[in-house]
Amino acid sequence: MQSGIQFNFDEEQRPEYRRQGSKLVKVVIKLSGGRVDETQANYILLGVAVLALIISLFLFFGSEKMPYQPSQQEILRTMTLPPVTPSTR
Image (cartoon, rainbow, N blue to C red; front, side, top):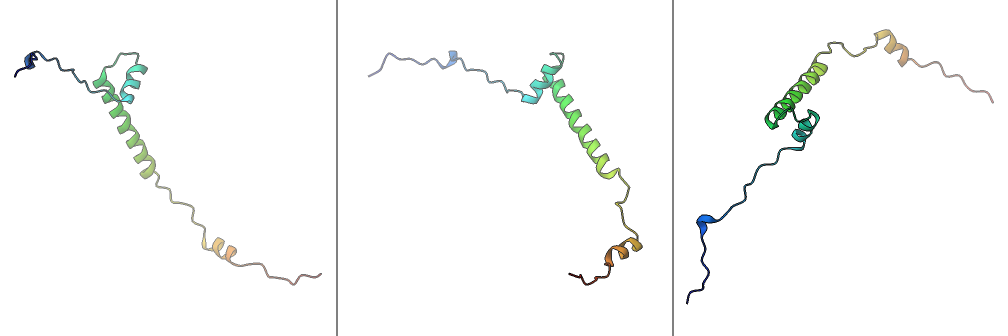
């Protein structure tokens, strides 16, 4: 018993899946007015990330200034309390 249904797998159309770009890439393309494509936008974002890393490393390691350290005299002055006088009521 055969049914009248025949499958023709050679002519089957499969949908093409295209990977969606990231939202940041779309923002860069939109901000550029469409002058850059997806690959160039990725390079721009990579450059921004590298620049941010360099700036943060410069701010973190670039400061050779030591934090304020009080002199021994200042430490002793803060450690000695004024004499306590009995209060008169």
